Amino acid sequence: MDTVARWAGACWIAAGVLFLSELVHPNALDIGFAEASRQWVWPALHVALVLAGILTVLGLAGLIATYGSRLGNLGLCGAVLAVPGVVVAAGLFLAEAFLFPGIAREHPELLDLGGPLLGSVGLRSTGALAGLWFLGLVLMGLAVERARVLPRGAGILLAVGTVLFAALEGPFLPVAGKVAVVIFAAAHIRLGLALASRRSSAAAETRLAA
Image 1 (cartoon, one colour):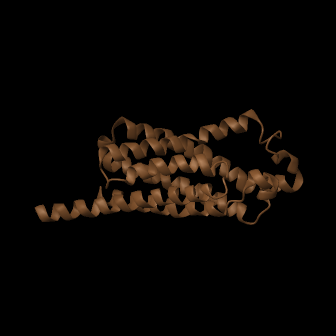
Image 2: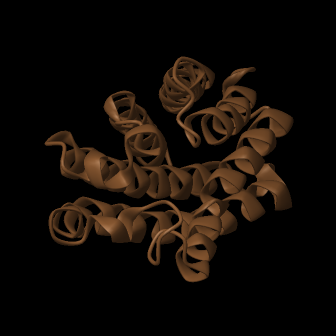
Image 3: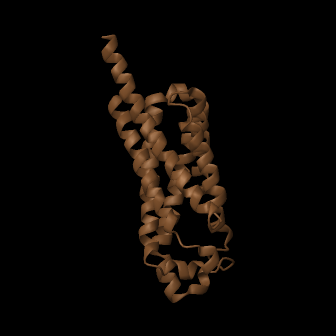
């Protein structure tokens, strides 16, 4: 379990670092998705978000493997909701990374916010399903904090950071959104460090007891 905890912590930390790439996300609601999709940073940014999602799933798996019974039904529900949310979000991010730039060049009107693509019920419903990722992280953060399996504050920071990220960066609020990105990324890094630290403390206590 020590190895699982160590790698899970590393995944949370790496995910947090990758989420910082959101700081350079162009304000697509302001300049339009067609213009945003033409920027050179657009594909790399969304690939980074896909990788962050994958690392988050691995981190969740390690957290459940290490503390599953102590996290209870709340933690299990958080993981069950977050995983399909990540899968759906990853699909959307990949579409944005590799399809949107071509659409922006050939048929930019399709990327109008109220247009036939972005305004479709199907795409908006898919986006809502991706929101399960955030709901799952909030529940997991609350479960970690309630179970006290990690140093106090690690779980609540994840829950609060996730809510702020979804509420402020989702609509691309100029300053508040970027602050929310930093808090969200810091929450992942903090949880990862706490998980690794907990593992080290537990190992030290075992050696002393022996």
